[in-house]
Image (cartoon, rainbow, N blue to C red; front, side, top):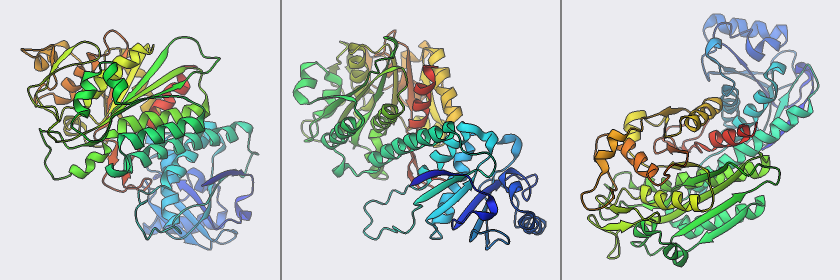
Length: 495
C-alpha cells in the first residue's frame, strides 16, 4: 500500500472514494464529516433522521455520487461517543474504511484528516490502514487479489502538509509493516516454520535492516549448558535454534541495554503430556513471542531510537518421541537452577529460562519477555487483554502505558512470594508447573526466577496473539500484539 499526503479541496478530490468519520452525538455534522459541502451534509441529516446514520462505532454508511463532489463514493465511518474517543482509534476507523471499501473493489481512496490530530494522529491513521489491508490467506490458490487498496491518500483541505506529517507517515508505515511481518511469521504452518526456517527469516530480516545477528545451533546450545531449552528440543527431529539480534546505535548511552526475549516454540504438541487433539493446529502460533521480538527489531532498525536493544529468541519444537523428555525428569538450566518436570506441556517457560539467562550473560540490564505461555491467562482475560507481570513496577508501568497509547490492552497481574510455594519441588530447586490455580501467575513467576535481580517484565500473549473473529478494522488470524506496544516503549524511552 502506498500512503501519501495530498492538499486539495474536498469537492475537487478526484480519487474513487473519500472516507470521513463522525460521532454519535451529531453523526451528520461532527468529526471530519462536518467539513463536507453543505448539500452533502443535508443528505447526511436526512440519513440521520431516518436512523440510517447513527455514528455508532465502525458503522459504515456509503453514499454514491455525492452531489457537488468529484469522488464517486463517500464513506462515513461511525466513531462512537466523542467523550470516549482515543487517538489510537483513528487507526481503527481508517482500518474499517479500508476493509469496507476494498471489499467493493476500491483500490484508491482518500481519508480526510484533522489538522488538530497532528503527527500522532497521522501516524495512527497510517498504521491502521496498512494493518487493515492484511489477510492471512497466503495458501489459498484462489486469492482475491482485487481486494487490496493500492493508494491511501491522507487529505488535508486546510493547511499544507508539514514535514512532521510526512515523518509520521513513515513511522506509522514502519511500525505497521513490522507488525505484519510478525503476523506473517505467526500465520505460517509448522511445516513451513521450523526453528531452522524461523532462523532463516530472522537472519534475512537482520541483513535487510542492518542489525547484528548471531545464531546458535544444537552444539552451541548444549555447549552453553542450556539444559532447559535442550530438554524440550531433544524430542524433535528438527534441530533447535537460538537467535540473537543486536541494535546498537552509536549515539545511545551505554545503559540500559534492553533485552527482548521471545518464546519461539514453532509447534507444541505438549510432548508426552500431550495436548487434546481439538485446536492443536493452533499450536503453530506458539512462536508468537519470538515473532513479536523479530518484528520489534525490524521496526526499531528503521526508526532508530537512542537505546541499545538485544533480542534473544530460543526456538524449538515440543514433540513426542522416544527421545522426548519425560514427566519426573530433573534438568539443569543454564543458570544452574535445577528443575523437576511435572508436565512436558509447560515447555515455554523452560525455553525462556535459558533465553533470559543468556540475555543477562550478553549484558542486558532490563529484560522484557513475551510468550504464548498459558491457557490460564485466557481464562482470566480472554483474547482481548494481555497479562503483564513483573517485579520492577516502573518498567511494568512503562509497558502498560505504551499499550494504552497504542490501543493494545494490558492488565497487570500479581507477582507475590506467597505463590512460590505452588511451584516448589521436593527434589529440585523448582517444579515447572504450579498446578491449576493461579496458573498464569505461577508460570510468570517461574520465568522471573531466571531474571534474578534484573528488572523484568513478562507479557503473556496466549489470548491476544490471535483473533478467531474478523473485526471491522482487522482480519481474522494473527494480530501482531504486542509489537506496537514494545516499539512505542523503545521509541519513547530515550525521550
